[in-house]
Length: 111
Image 1 (tube, rainbow, N blue to C red):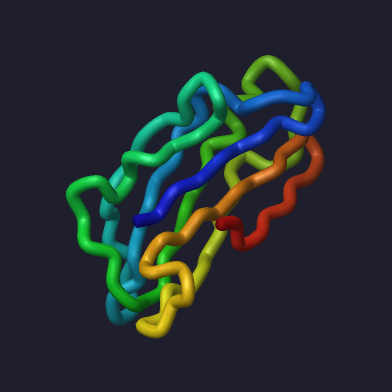
Image 2 (tube, rainbow, N blue to C red):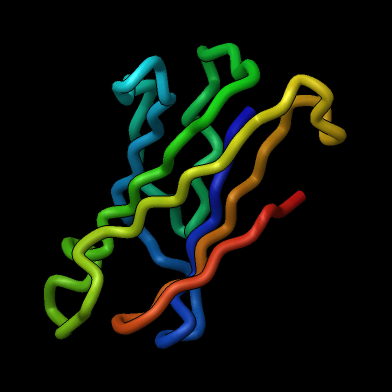
């Protein structure tokens, strides 16, 4: 299962309604797996509800440009690539939080 949580550090709260796309790297291409929007808590937990997550390289694309459409911002989107290993210590659950502001972002491996 792949989940995410987006927090807007400039506002001090969740990034509600942000569009997120999940893709998997296959060969030299990226294959779209799912997409969705963050909920009222800034979470998106349904991306892989009907998808088996196996080992591989994945990418989450966050549409920060649309989210910040009323505010001047530097990043039109944020892409986070990560690897899921067979021997993943979290039993296949991968949580990728994103902290954003109009001029910066950070991410990490969550639990």
